[in-house]
Amino acid sequence: MRLVRAKVRPGHPWVFANEILDPPVARLIPGETVQVEDPHGRPLGVGYANPRSLITIRLCGLGVDIDSPAFYAERLRAALQMRQQILPGRRSYRLCAGEADGLPGLLIDRYEDVLSIQITSLGMDQRKDFLREAIVEVLQPRAVVLRNDVGLRTLEGLPLEKLLWWGDLEGGVRFEENGAPFEVDLLEGQKTGFFFDQAENRAWAALRCKDARVLDVFAYVGAFAVQAMRAGAKEAIAVDSSALACQWTRRNAELSGVEVKTMEQDAKDAMSALGDQRFDIVSVDPPAFAKSRKTAAAALVGYRNINAQAMKLVRPGGLLFASSCSHHIHPERFAETMVEAAERARREIVLVRRGGQAPDHPILPGVPETEYLKHLVFVVR
Image 1 (cartoon, rainbow, N blue to C red):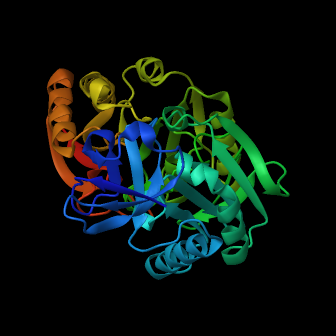
Image 2: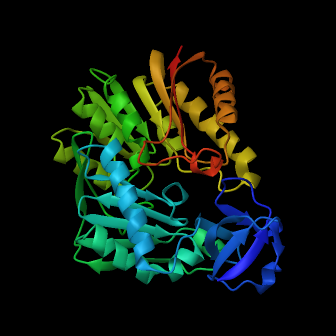
Image 3: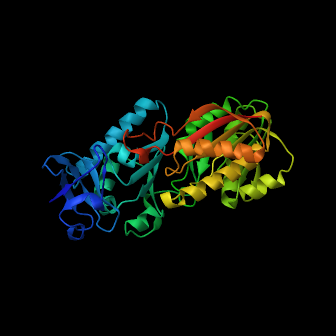
C-alpha cells in the first residue's frame, strides 16, 4: 500500500490531482491501493488511485481493507439494511449509490432478484472479482447485468461494455413501484434500466391526477403516465423519441390495465404538434443537459426553452412538474431558469413544492456531487 500525502477537503471522498503533495501523480500505479494522509501525517483514508483521472484517488474509509471480498460484503450489507429501514416492503430500488454508500464508482439497481450494475472507476473495475463474491454472499441474485456503457468510464481509461455478467435473464424484468407493475429491458434500456430516483415525486404527483389530462414529456418507459392513469387520470400522453421506450410504455400501461397514448417524437416537435391543446398536468423530465461545468450555461438555455414550451400547454391553474438531473446545475439557477421560462412563455408561475431524489439515492452532506436531482412543481397561470 502506497502512502500519499494530500491536502483534501474535509469529509470529501475525492482527491484531485492538484491536491496531492507527495509522491508525484505520475508515480502512482493505476488502480493501486493507497493510504492518504494530510500534510501533518494524520490519516484521511484508504482508497484506490488512478493517475489518468482528474479524480486521482477515491477514498473508501479509514483503516479498511479494500482488497478483500469482506469489505464489499460489509458495505453491501449496510446498504441493504438502510434500504430495508427507509423503504420497508420495497423489493426494487437503488441498492448502492456509490460514494454515499462507501463504494466509490459503483451503482447497483435492484429489480427484486435481478441486479443492474454500473462501474465507473478504475479501482472498482479492477476489484470486480471481490465485488462479485460479495454480491453472491449478500444478495444471491438470479442474474446480474453490467451496464458499463457510460462516458465516465472513458475518463477513467476503461472500455465501454454492456453484458449479462452472470445468471439467467431473458427479455424484460418485472418489478413494482408505488404499487404499479413495470417491466424494463436492462440490457437495451437507458442507463441502469429505470429511474428510481423519481419514485416519491411520482407518488406525490399521482395523488393530483384524478380526472386530469396528463402530458409526460421525456417519458422513457412511462412511469409517470402509467401511475397517473392508475390514479384516475382521464387521459395520459407519453412523449419520447425512442421507439423502444414508447413500446415499453404501452407494455407497462397494459400491465396496469390502463391506456397511455404515445408520441414517438423529439420533445420539442411533439409539443409543437400538440398545438393549442391544454393539459391539467405536464411533467418534463429530460436527460442530463449538462455533462460538465463547461456545458452548464448552454444546458440552462435548454431547460428554459423546453419548459417554456411546456408551460404553454398547461391550462390556467394547472401543474408543471419540472426536473433536472444535472448535478452541474445549481438548484437556485434552475429555479431562476424556470422564471425565465415563464417570461418567455408569457405565464406566471407559483412554486408549490420542491422535491429531490428518493431516499434510496442518499446524499452525503458536504459532498454536493451526491445531490443532483432538482424537482420543482409549479402552478401555471
